[in-house]
Image (cartoon, rainbow, N blue to C red):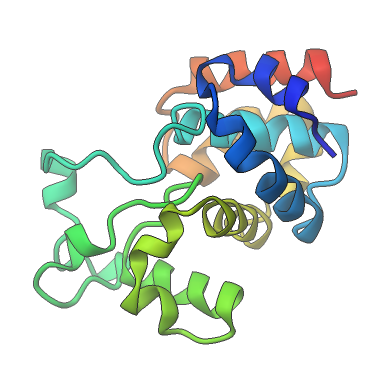
Length: 181
């Protein structure tokens, strides 16, 4: 279990949002077996970067050229006009695309329609935390995290599809190492 003080050291820019996310994060970490020091350190580092230290639970929409390509992307399951924006990245690990919202809905709500009908639910602390935990476990991130820093780049690629923000993610990881033992 992580404490308020630990989270404040790891994510100093989170401010008051720490209190909104502390219990949901602990619950999600328990539910999805993020239950060792290495797993917790890596998880908090990754969600810390993905969410701007708990400040963003929804992708900042431009749309950028990359975001414009979300529309009608088969690999994301975006088949209807507006799906790209409607199913933009949400949660502490940005769940993106109709197909991923559907899979996440099935995991979190035992149906494939709740998040399709109400994608904004992933902007609330508990679903945002649980969706991150679900993504983490279902994509084999616990096992990658068990490798420590030596597998951190592979872990980042699993979450991000590339190495965007690797330096920041590593800085968060090293802060987490200092307080989670």
